[in-house]
Amino acid sequence: MLEVRGLVVRYGGITALRKVDLKVDQGEIVCLVGANGAGKSTLLLAVSGLVRPSAGRIIFEEQDIAGHKASRLPRRGLILVPEGRRVFANLSVSENLALGGYVYPRDARQRQDLDEVLEMFPRLAERLSQKAGTLSGGEQQMLALGRALMGRPRLLMMDEPSLGLSPLLVAEVFHTIRRIRERGVTVLLIEQNASAALAVADRGYVLEVGKVVLSGTGRDLAADPRVQRAYLGMT
Image (cartoon, rainbow, N blue to C red):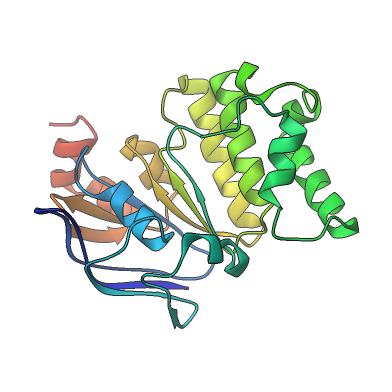
């Protein structure tokens, strides 16, 4: 579904990504693991059109989208859940969800989309008229995921979905990621919680200073002593 070839991204004189190669097959959950500053978020921003690559190709469903405008990509089913959730604080939960499906007509299909999101996140159904900024952190993450699902993603990219959440809510987020994949959505995930990410991922990549240094199945990476020492707190 997605293939990145030789991707280079520079910010002025700083090279954030150095000839990165990766792929995501349809139906997979793929995670990116690495320390802060490794280039993980930059990669998602480049794929989603928010950062222009300096070199390389980004092929989504057999079309090179490198350099495409970010506003065009949700219509192709490529949707990003940004770090920090970025809900519209002064709008209601209902309005936030409606904005997630803005590229589609307001018809029976969109009503069905909303029903499916509220079935997945019943707490949002109880808060439809509440302003998003008054929700708890966990509820805002549910809203960010629900808003993204309203856009009917084919590839859903998530940047640190468990950031700042309690352990109980982290477990709930990763359970939700599994459910999203069961709905036929492919997932590309960035996560500081490497243990939880590798447990849910089919495959993963380890980034260090803008380069892919390891790749493999989620299980194999979790068992790799280098990953255990660097990211799983094991000696």
